[in-house]
Image (cartoon, rainbow, N blue to C red; front, side, top):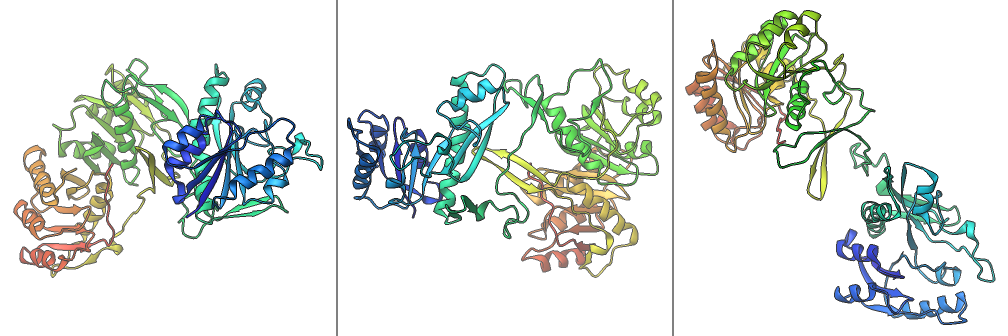
Amino acid sequence: MTRIAGMAGNRGRNLLNIADRAPGGAELAVVLTNNDDAPVLEAAAERGIPTAVVPLEDEMSRKEHEEAVNEALADYEYDLVCLDGYMRILSDTFLEAQPTTLNVHPSLLPSFPGMDAWGDALESGVSVTGCTVHVVTDATDDEGNVIEEEVDAGPIVTQEPIPIYEGDDEETLTERVLYEGEFRAYPRAVKWFAEDAVEVDLEKGEVTVDADAADAPDAEGLPARRLTSSDRLDTLRYGENPHQDAAVYADYTCDEASVVHAEQLNEGAKALSYNNYNDADGALNLIKEFDEPAAAVIKHTNPAGCATADSLAEAYERALSTDPMSAFGGIVSLNRKCDAETAELIVDSFKEVVVAPGYADEALEVLCEKQNLRVLDVGELGESTERFTEKPIVGGRLVQERDLQAISVDDLEVVTEREPTEAELETMVFAWRTLKHVKSNGILFARGTETVGIGMGQVSRVDAVRLAAMKADEHAEGKDAEGAVMASDAFFPFPDGIEEAAKAGIEAVVQPGGSVNDEDVIEAADEHGIAMVFTGQRSFRHD
């Protein structure tokens, strides 16, 4: 366990934050100050942390005071020294007698190294400042005089950028640098030292952090830190619900077609809402799966229907017919330039948003007749260039690679006595690509290259099968589950899902496989003459 000797001159808020968070299991062995009245003494005592005071007496030289500090610290065992507003320049009298000593400075060194880093940053007019955790090095001459240009010049361990906004003053900027910058950077640095991931070479003036390497072999390409910067594009009427404030932020380095950067062509329509953005993003990502003319209708980020066909209008008709009742007030996405025929079909029932890579003039005229239909032109779809997706959670965020798997017929392993037909195999591929965009637990029924029924977001897989069957039998127009293919985003833990599928008329199944009960599930499929294949990969979607 790494133990820290903390040295503060006043409140010691960084030290207390480190004590509370214990990064890497580190703990404070002692807090020392040169100020009898420093509030950190009481705060440390409340946490059970030993304290020490070494006042700076009149006529006491720098060397004499540092020797007294060394003597006071000699009673404690520790591996690292952390300064926090200590307000004393340290010399080799202290530094050579102690382990590595860290300090945090409220700017992105080497910019603004002085005592008034916040004011200097504001006065300079820069738009970004931040904080720097660095190794403390001697900044004095042989007589103990301070060499100003060597203050805060030790090798840098880590930094954290903080934006400066129009109208900021020293108070607002200082607070943001502390709570959003230093409270991130200092514990990070301590954690690295606690994990023995840092090498300090004072002769070269270098710090090497294995945990911060861009090509760390165990990181799978996921960066050690994510520093994201985006600009507020617009404030929204509200969030998911009227009592929640919301805004949309734009990343202008993103080259991939997106609803954030889409042009809104119906000038009279309302601005997009939080839910519109979320649903439209899901709709766009779904139709990017297909090379053939494709259309989808999305409701609450789930597909209500999806299809590919020889023409865009036909694809839209087939997608809509899966569940026209649920499609009311939904989002339409197309992977081709919208033509007039498709536009006429879209406006035949209420929709919130249309997303497409362009619109014919005649189509735009038809769509814009609907006053509040938002018409988004995302431009050329192109390639999927964004590698990661992320989901903020309380206290952090989850980051993962996007699910860009694209199976082919050759990837499917037949596990039943009956082999699927060529048509069923093609339907399985279509169904799997669509199912990736259905909330888990997800079940999708399809025939040809169109959906028939979709069961989404269930806590029981067998209930998802029942829901898909109900949707196919009661909501779909001109089609049903009889003879359809069923896709499941994860394995069937028991045969009951197959039993329900057989009742609905399913004749072929595509699923990942991998259950301890796979043999029982396969046996149930064989008993009903159902062909089944395994993909060998799951396709959960939980957000």
